[in-house]
Image 1 (cartoon, rainbow, N blue to C red):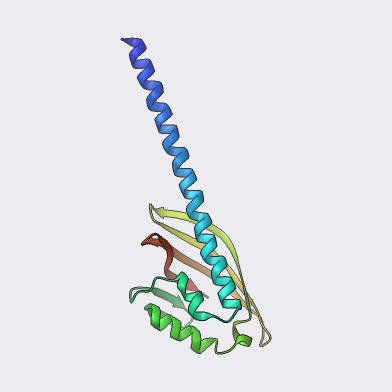
Image 2 (cartoon, rainbow, N blue to C red):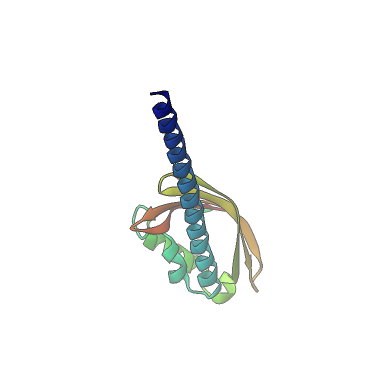
Amino acid sequence: MNITRYILGIVLICMSCQSEIGDLKTEAQDKNEIIAVLKAQEKAWSNYDIEEYMQGYWKSDSLKFYGSNGLTYGWNKTLSNYKKGYPTKEHTGTLNFKVEDISKISVNSYYVMGSYHLSRSVGDTQGVFMIIFKKIDGNWRIIADTSC
């Protein structure tokens, strides 16, 4: 009887370790996928393709963007604000993100903290951000963005 309990205990411990290793692999994969979205955004922005840049955002009226002009709701309004604020290639310049932290909030959501730098002929600019990613229909999308 004691040997059966011992073996059962070992099996349960092994199963627990495998679950934790699986969670770590999944979390690493999630973070890599989130970084890929940010890299695609850097490329699109730097090519003055704001619509492609916006593909990283949740295409919903519930998207939230909080910046120097206050809180904006919705994908279309956010796109409109970007186009208004960055009307030419000279204004968008070349975008570089520096990610400082990606932390899991829940099973399908993470927050990302970092900074951005725009190198541009009309004058460089930079700031910080905290964005929330959520996996929606199998894709990582920004559902909330605070940038300043």
